[in-house]
Length: 333
Ligand code: AQP
Image 1 (cartoon, rainbow, N blue to C red):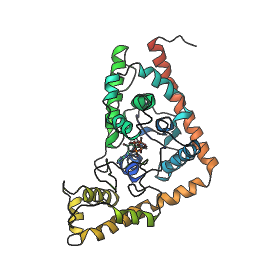
Image 2: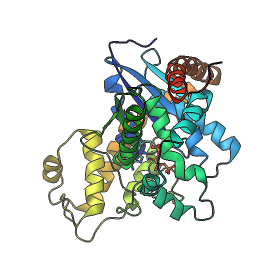
Image 3: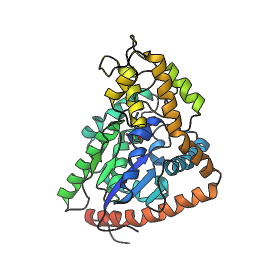
Image 4: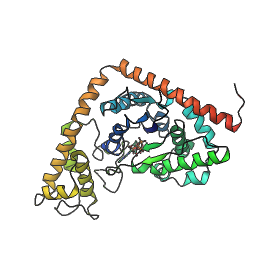
């Protein structure tokens, strides 16, 4: 159960595709450090995933697999509450209330909405537009202090802060105003096919993304094909976005600084470097792949983790939701 003296950390991942090294380096890898000192909750945000059309059987499969990836990445179920968003109805309920405290103008300014409505021009649904309000509900329900996310989600956490402050000012202190936690590196891994674009799990180009669960051969092949710049020098420089991205990935997995990487590959050219990045990435992910396979062999266990996680999360969520319902003036049951 929650420890009142500890702060709370919350984050989520959409089961909208097989998770990439962007999701890993920008988000999941940073979660482990909080598990001893924080009340920590991590959620597979399936309600968010349906803002884009999903194949139902695929979504169901990926939801359980995403939970297994959290665990395979080292999230200890005795220290972290791992759950599925749609199992805790308070997320959708609080989102409705917060919709009434969110402004059309501020939602229109969200860059992810602009990007996704361009990408899914035939399905610009209301859910895509109000996605950040549901995300604010996810965060505020647990009285969250910090939200570890990649840079692309910072704007949404800032909106959650604005919504919390607006609600607190309208009534009285109700929500903790959360802070985004952005790691010092790996917070925006770029596509291997176009290094000016973020790597995204829903990208249809298989060569653009490296999945956490890709085989070693696939990972090496994808890095070998990665789009780089003209020239052959491994150097961190603004005019070399492809090489900068590969250096960032290599640095995140190896712990080496850019300076050390430049020295290591001095005079060796892109081919050698790409192979080394592929090997470093594949070898670092190999224990995760093995643990994932092991976890997936016992679906009943995973379902039970989700069930227990949802029970713990529901208890906490209900406390905040009841408070909110009282403040806005809903009649008690
Ligand atoms: N390329 C990335 N680099 C670093 N961090 C990233 N994140 C996503 N892509 C990168 C972080 O991963 C967490 C989970 O993201 P999400 O599932 O909530 O949705 P997203 O940000 O929209 O991620 P994707 O992979 O791009 O999904 P799709 O393709 O469905 O839109 C977040 O903390 C995010 O910052």
